[in-house]
Length: 455
Image 1 (cartoon, one colour):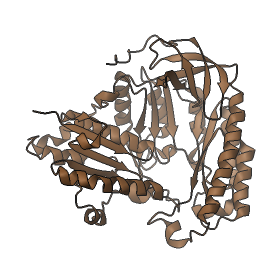
Image 2: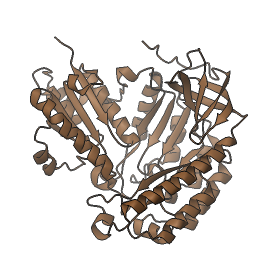
Image 3: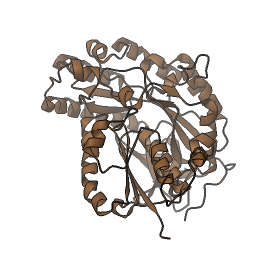
Image 4: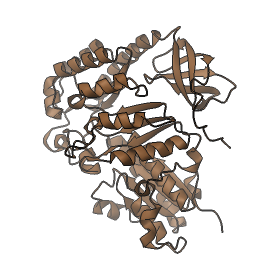
C-alpha cells in the first residue's frame, strides 16, 4: 500500500500555527506523512485567517488555485479550516467552493478526522473517535517531523474572545471566550517538554482573562505558577495582553518566577482617546501610559511590544499624530503595525465609514514603521558588549539563532549541536530587528531530558 501524504497551508496568528500542529498530529496518528508539495498530498488543509482583508484574499486565491488539482484528483480530500469558516460555518462558502470536502471551525480537527475515519481506507468505528484525539485523551504528540526540531511551542489556553472591539472579527469567527482547564494545559506542556520543547508561549486573544468566565476558577497567575514547575521547560511566555487586565498580581508573578520571560505584549492600538473610544478599547491614553510605567517599575530589564492600527474610521491627521507622539514618547521595543481593514459583521464596518484613503493609511504606516525602526535600533545598541542568555532554536543561513528572555533575536556561530540549549552570547553587533555575537559558554542547564536526536 502506498504511503498517504498530507499538506497543511497555514496563514495568520500563532493560534493558527498551534491549530495546524494539532491537525498534523492527528493525521499522523492515522498514518499520514507530511509533504511540502500540495500536488502530492492525499489530504490538503488550508488553515485560514481573515483578520485583515489581505489575509482573506490570500486564502481565497489559494482555494481557487487548488480547484484544478481537485478536479484532476477527486479522491484528494480538501479541508478548509480556521477563521474563514468560523464557529458557525458558512453556507455561502459551501456554495462558493463546492469542491471543498470538509469545513472545520478554528481549533477543531474533528470534522476532518471524522471524515477520514469514515472512509473505507480507515475503517475505524466511530465509537473509537474520541480515543484518537490527542487533546481529549491528554496524550499530545507533536507531528513527527517537528519532534526534536521544535524548541519553542505555542499552547492555546483561551479560545475565542468576548471583549468585542469594534474593529475585530475574532468574536464572530472564533466565538465567545472559553478557557481550557489548568490540568489539560499542564498535561500538554509536560508532553511537549518530553518531546524536546524547551519554551512555551501561552496563547489567548486576551490571555490575561484566562479562567475569568469560570466562577472561582484559576487565573493566569495560577496557570503560570503551575507551568513554571514543569521540568525541562526553561522559558514561558504569554500573549496577547490587554491593558485592562494586566494586573499587579500578574506582574508580580512575572517578576518572581524564574522561567517567566520579562517580555510583555500589550497593544495600545491608538494614541488618541476618541479613537480608542470608537474602537471600544476600554481605556484612555493616560491609562496606557500608567500601565507602561508600572510594567517598567516591576520589570526594569524587561521589554514591551505593542500593536497599532492606523487609518481607523474617522482618524484625523491630528489624531494620528497623537499616536505617533505616544510611540515616540514611550519608546517600546516592538510595534506591530496594521492598516485598518473593515471586516464583515464588526461594528466598525456596519456603522463607520472607512474614510481614510488607502494612500494616507500607507503614509502613516510607513512613517510609524520608520519611527519604530529607529527606536528599536537605539534600544538594541544598549546590548552591545553585554552577555545575554539565548535559548537556541535552530540554524538559519549557517548560523545558530535563538532568543533572549526579552525576545531579541540573536545569531552566532558554533560547530557544536546546540539546539534546545541555553547558552551565553556576547553581543558584538546590533540592528533594529536582531543581534549578532560570539558564543561565550554553552549548556547552562545540564539536567534536562535530552532533545531527541535528529535524523
